[in-house]
Image 1 (cartoon, rainbow, N blue to C red):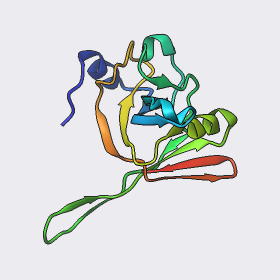
Image 2 (image 1 turned 30 degrees about the horizontal axis):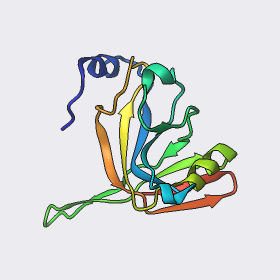
Image 3 (image 1 turned 120 degrees about the vertical axis):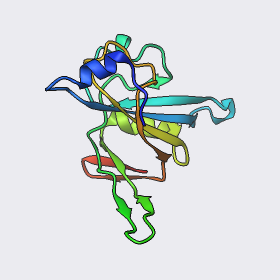
Image 4 (image 1 turned 30 degrees about the vertical axis):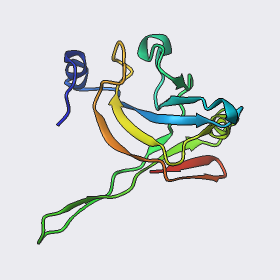
Length: 151
């Protein structure tokens, strides 16, 4: 069950809503100057927005939208035991200089990641929206044109 604000309800109750995703990676360790032990939260998004009002001063945030796609969650249910198994998902990022710089600067493998349902039509977002998936970053696989973050 999700707990959401009245504004969130109002935006998502519209007949046509511009939905997006924010990925919050908790405790990403900075690899540049590793002795500093600097740890921060990273925020990635999939949509254009007024960054100042949409995100405020939260962690290190990519000003350009970098999430190209979030793969569907795979779920299975055992019909006899009625156990539900949630499979893996992944995030596709463009294979660009800006994205590679972030992935080379921060160690995100093994860190907790949460995927939030958001909309650029919200006046602000402070991390209190509904996280529809929480897991661990398992791997990063770069191919020509895209980078896949395996969750």
